[in-house]
Image 1: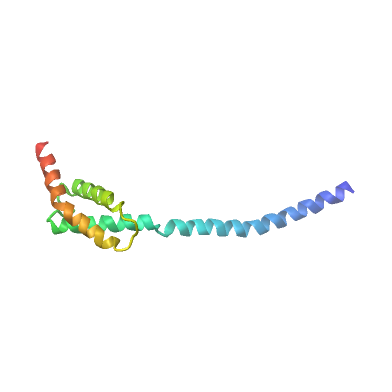
Image 2: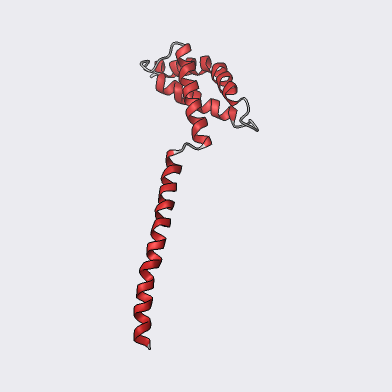
Length: 118
């Protein structure tokens, strides 16, 4: 009786793995979709970077400018610091623009002063 039960178990095992395989594929596929889809914080970070870039352009600091990277990074960090105090994301885009505009001149002046001392 022991011998017949072993083949039965082995024949059931492939059925279980076969059923598990499609489920496993869907889990992997959904993980892939999550990685493709942008999270809310990633979206806000991307938008803030775009706002900072546009603000610097308005202040005549384009991507070609030697201080663009430093100004962009500094203005991004300062803006992000101010925006963390917001309780909701309502009106976030307008707040991003306002914060970047309010701090752009000071950041540009500070970075240019630092680079000229070197």
